[in-house]
Structure formats: structure tokens, C-alpha cells
Image (tube, rainbow, N blue to C red; front, top):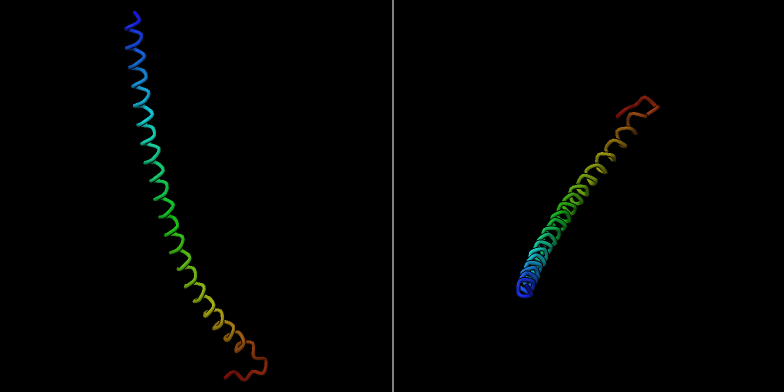
Amino acid sequence: MRAVAVVAGGLLLLGGTVLIAVADQQRVEALDEAKAAVVEAEERLDAARDANLRLAEKLTALRTVIADQETLLSDTTGLLP
């Protein structure tokens, strides 16, 4: 009976060790996937920032043109150029 208990205990110990190894491997893979997702998100954020900067420059130029046109249209003398 002891032999059966020892064998069963050994099998349980071996099975637990295998489960721990598999779980650790899955944790490492999940961590690598999370790191890759963070890198991808940072790259998309940088691209969005660059696009936002370009659009802000265009918007500033357009606002300048609009301000110039409003100045011309608000001419109270009636002598538009």
C-alpha cells in the first residue's frame, strides 16, 4: 500500500511540476505579446502626433488667411482693394 501511495505521490508531484512549467511558459508568451502591443501602440501614437503636428501647421496657415480676409471684409470705408 505504501508503494502505491509513493507512486501516486510521485505522479502528482511530476504532474504539478509539468503544470507549473506550462503555466510559466504561457505567462512568458503573454508578457511578450503585451510588450509587442505596447510597442505597436507607441508607434501608432507617434504617427498620430506627427499627423497632428502637420495638421496644426496647416490650420495655423488657414487661420492667418481667414484673419486677413476678415480684415479686408470689415473695411468700413467702403473702399475695398
